[in-house]
Image (cartoon, rainbow, N blue to C red):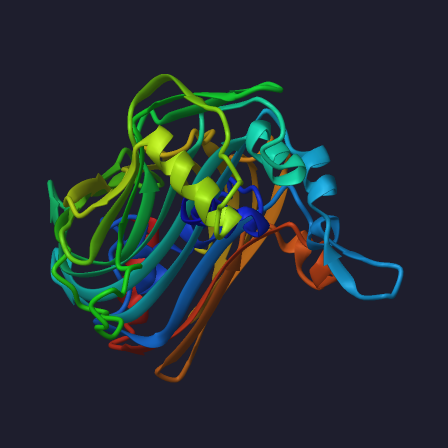
Length: 437
């Protein structure tokens, strides 16, 4: 039983997050080539944009501060306070954290569109858990419990792809598509509709379970093979985008990303608890027993019909929708409203909204955003900038800059994107014409 419990316990200290997804970064639009990861329809301003490996982003938002979980003991040392974590838990808690690395990106501007080539790695942690789970962590298996709304996915994969954008109707309409070859590195998830409960009394434990399986790939090393970045786990992903200029100053964008799935076939292990109805565990006879813990684990395993299999499985990426309206206030000033919805198959996430303003100068832009949604509807104020120094571009964006500069132990949210690019083929006249069309 220990191996089934440890899979879940490992993640408890990461927090409870439903972070917004780079809404401030979205407002950089065609200034930064990496925004194509959010909306493939954005056209680069420069003839050639080359992304260096120094491009990354992370979203994280937590109900718990580090200081809520790690507290000082009487001796001054830090200790993990599970009781406090349990006291802060809600009936439904959720994590949606992602780390994105753009290892390579090449954008080429065409006369009526663009062509992009890219290599990304992504690591996602999605977890929805109840206070029943934290009760068990705090009090152990000494009382009845029911896990029926626990969902978990931790996944790491790479994507290599190509994107193409083309303008029509005298450049009023633009359509875009990005096709991605996916390679799964590691993955673990609780099977959909999993149920596991125990009714504990003085004489016995009564179990019920259904679909109680944890599917994994890339975590077992029974064969002794070294950890592999490129594996036999493959898939295809597609991003779609459309832009329409309603007037010379007003335009609308829609992007639907991450349509696709990964087939996990390599280094797969499924940890199963058999479907049981009123299975009874009456304890063990300790007389003559060797290792008591082994005896308990063996007996429980027999009652619950635990097993390990190696059956391949498939997982959806989870589509993401961006929709925005941009209004060109003047040649240098832009106002934009953005809507984001993460259709995550593993947890329930509320949509996010943001209103942003950006001022564009000759070789730079900077702006501010005000957003809400995702976590609890609280307002967040973000900022972004991109500046070109000769052929070098620096950029950064944050959705909630109020957390910047705070004490690490008191921070419970962050959403940052930053990077370095090389740009070639800057043409002032072309940029001005595009801004006012």
